[in-house]
Image (tube, rainbow over the protein chains, first blue to last red):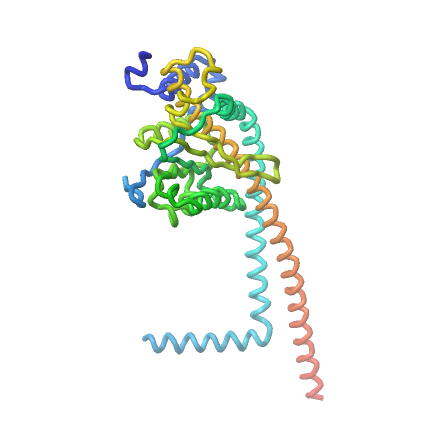
Length: 55
Length: 297
């Protein structure tokens, strides 16, 4: 069993953290560009029994 | 009060008819119409320019994302993964966006899902749908509201990032829905003027471990397969979102180009009628003046 999985992470979390660290290690001029790729905009609405659950 | 209002309305309507018969109001209404069509043309033209710029970027991004999706697909093909028998739970991921005005990009995806689900009643019972983008949600909720697992919104305003795909994957894994097999349905970009509906397969961990040719791949243990499945789900989602975004922008470009062209035709014919009507009004006024003068002699 891998350590990070024992800690309750899945591979996606693990790779996201690794990616963040790599971006931080970049030089300042490249970092600004890389930060842009780090953004997320997606939001979620859960559905149950044919209706959206209000937040 | 109401009676008065009605009286006033009928009075103005009568007046309008009178002025319209004289041809003055039509001139005015044509010029208003002309102006609004011109404004619409300006909007569609600028939308075309915007989506052309976005399309260029999306195509560049797509080239980089392609290996991610193709790689996972080829893994499933090489290992000859088939869904486990008996597990009837299925998943369908509809990759669309929040934005319209781009031809049949979103309706095509939704129609594909609708047709497969309507053709088979047992699939309709056991399939859950994940909608990426409001457009597929709006179409699919009318028929399959009970099948929708969750909806991802705020897609399409900016180009999709890997983190977006990763977030959707995490949401999917946290939803607690276990599926035996599934499909990601998306528009595959072919050229500026064409796209086709394509699908990527999704399988459960069990079906991968029991695949007939899994031994082709070396040093696979439980952890590796688990991690790879998580990653391949995210990367296939990412790839399909990139393909979808690219097709959407290219399709919006053509749609807006056609809209501008049609608006141009409308403007031409409206200008023609406008000039004709104006000429008719001038002629009529001249006749009135001349005949008036002739009557005085």
